[in-house]
Image (cartoon, rainbow, N blue to C red; front, side, top):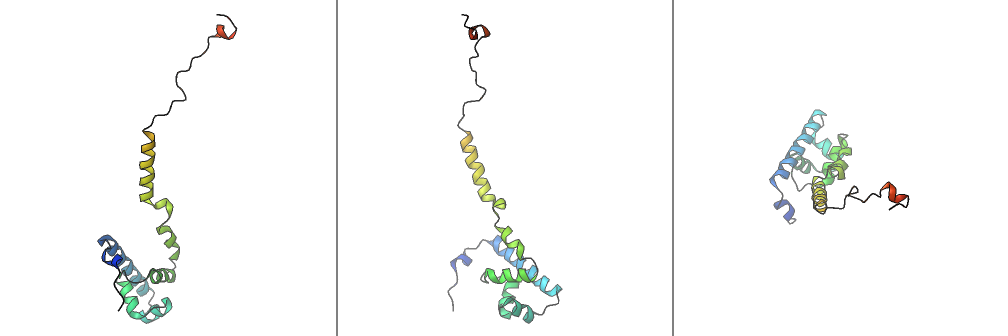
Length: 126
């Protein structure tokens, strides 16, 4: 029997809840299409027990199985959006933190007081 991954043991409960919701949604999609478990499993390329585990949100089921199920539903295009840079809130927060740290240093203003020569001194008059 394969050794259980430490990543699964350390998985946050919120992630497990999201996987369960994803599995449930995939199960509903299969049922709405009137696809029997055996047929759907064959189309994904997995055994029925693996498909059943996926539909329960088992984190040990490979990402490829979930991705293939999404593809069968016509939803595989959402996968790249999951990690799209513009939705990376952690990186955005870091960029804001860096920007705030930079703003602590005051740069000289472009509109600082600059001595403006008198019109008389421009003409060479004292």
